[in-house]
Image (cartoon, rainbow, N blue to C red; front, side):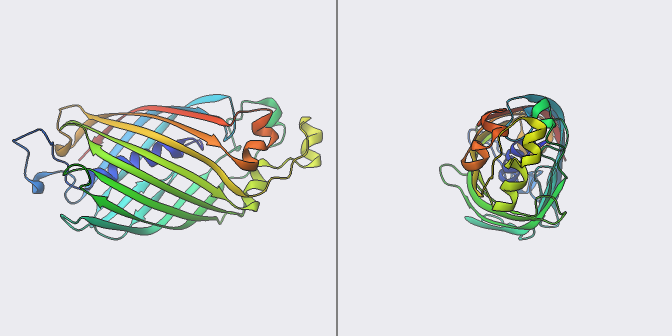
Length: 288
């Protein structure tokens, strides 16, 4: 995200995470020395794109929106996009390490069913408040699995709403494989899921008697559990054919997720929406 944008930004993070290690082309004998990579030390990637995704999680109506993204590293601290939010990895990567550890704070806002609700029946349930989720994230990255420049990263976010909206907890695990395909092209595949507690599920997916009277939807009491599972494919293409020197690049993304449990069974999904959630984005970024 707006909520669907987290899929895009998480994938962009995975691309940036792989790039934070030296990226050298496997098929280029003139590959530049490690110390000359723009990703070896402090760097910043800023981008803007156009994204198409569901108007809320569980919707079958789609909206088009701008998608700004910023990621990078400063003095050994990596900062990574999280939905509308940011995560800070405070453990510096060790040059040439086979294994890197990831840990730090994460904060993100959640605008689900707060705006851009295209379905008039769901809109009649009323707008929901903006949630601000805060907590730690941790993970491990294994480098050089199938080639000298790829990586496999497993990580998990633990976030609690501190803004008094859903007042619940979200657990967000993900597994990302990143690899360069040539000196100018890199790609990543991310598999992720979200587990939510009863407070979260009740806030976004329950239908109260008053909500039923306003919308005509049946009452529904949602409980916690696995909310969705999905996969995201992202490809970055450097416009001068060399990822390692920064500059402009194009970013292509596609993702699919499937709603699960009570979020899938809720009338806002099962009657007014769809358990199948698609997302796509096209953007341009600049790294320096």
